[in-house]
Image (tube, rainbow, N blue to C red):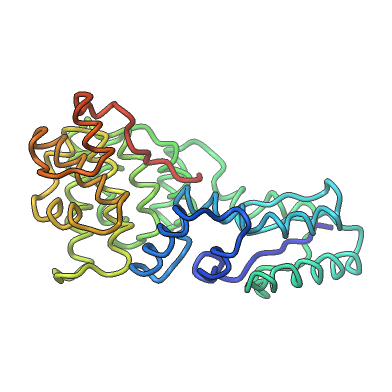
Length: 301
């Protein structure tokens, strides 16, 4: 039998004090986490590579507990474990051990998602949904408005006019798809449809703020994905409005400010930012090439 254990609402449930108390925490990382938490109310953000790494480090003690209980007969994907057990009694024993380990981190298991599965159930569900050629998966996703199929297709699709044209409306319906949309647009940036989708996503990001002077707590993550594309592709950088650049060039979030400064320089020239941050200043001195240490758009796929 397979015991599936999934944490309840993992990302938003991770407390700042728990992360700061981790033995691997550094002063620089703690400062960045405090700033992110102050502006967003969260420590970990779904779909970001840095959150994935922090989450894995935080859950390492729980992995050790599972390993002591199950030997090598287990695996974890994100915040969910699959453990091979002989029977329900062994499953209850492992579940109790994991429950106690999570409680030390201020976390708990999801009653709805955790339980015993038949061995063949592991390859059903999401794995079955995404089987097939990318084009077919995309068409099935559109027919059923299926987020899981959209995730699969956007991670693998080559630039396609139809997909590009659909992106702004798709992300508006399902904001969780923005990281995958950014991944796709990184490959479609040189196409007219890709540029149009990028502009549409910028309009969506602004509309989500409601035109307020102070952006909402999700705005840094929306613009972080989009500005990374602008920093990687000069043609997209020139499409970013001055109002967006002005706002994020003044943010206290250093990584986001660096992105905005790189986009400004890439789109407008080396004198676009009067007093850039040190890493951006060094990049400008090296020639300000978009291909010089570009920001990443990848997320865990």
